[in-house]
Length: 280
Ligand SMILES: C[S@@+](CC[C@H](N)C(=O)[O-])C[C@H]1O[C@@H](n2cnc3c(N)ncnc32)[C@H](O)[C@@H]1O
Image 1: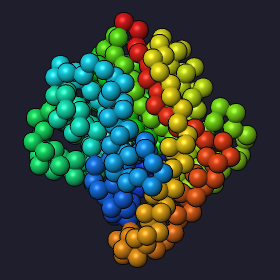
Image 2: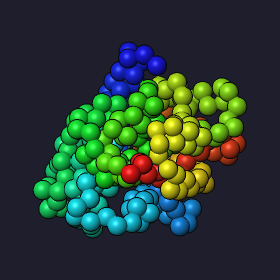
Image 3: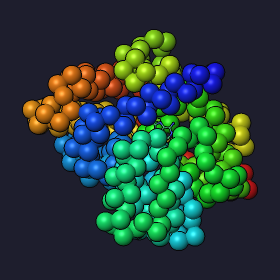
């Protein structure tokens, strides 16, 4: 993948997440904390509650998080996970994120939650992490790496900034390992990407970098429930969200959500929690 393609993907993601329409939409649907797929106890469950459960589950999977643990959250959005990790375990978290609009709210929310001293909010791209080698015990990311135009480079960067024995844990909307060619084009076109990753891709790329698999948990049903719930929520507050984000944005979003639901129904997609450990 060429430098210009990579930059283009980064530019598109930055412009999208900084836009007033997108910001208003994400703030409204998730309430300014999380913007990722939830783990649902029941199909009609509240989006924010389910989304918080994903953060709690990932933290539980990591185990011994303490005040000594240094975490980087790659594509941190509004920083909800960082606030949870800082407030619950006292971890220090660097939030690396491309959207200045989201970063501003992240800093404001950290101040209100009294965790500013534990969280640094950094504008930048996970394709060029602005940190020295071996800086972190944990690299954390939720539903963000899909936006990269050069995922092997993101994994190189994760490998570089993790300490020996450090762990990477992330979720990512992906394609199924056996997904037929071309069927996901409507999804790719909408988010302006050439490809999605897959569990097989992450397994082979991370093992090629010497990482050991800790846990890979496929949970496509939650992706389906999540995009269905977001669509329902949007329909039920259609006029209010159109006032904030515009009719074109909301109608496109509804169409886009349906593509994800259809892709999940056909088994062409994948989603879940991936956890690997860097060699000690
Ligand atoms: C679906 S949101 C998830 C946000 C957050 N991880 C969460 O779970 O709430 C995707 C995020 O990826 C960020 N992002 C996209 N491309 C990025 C890049 N190249 N470097 C850093 N962040 C990026 C966006 O700014 C956005 O906040």
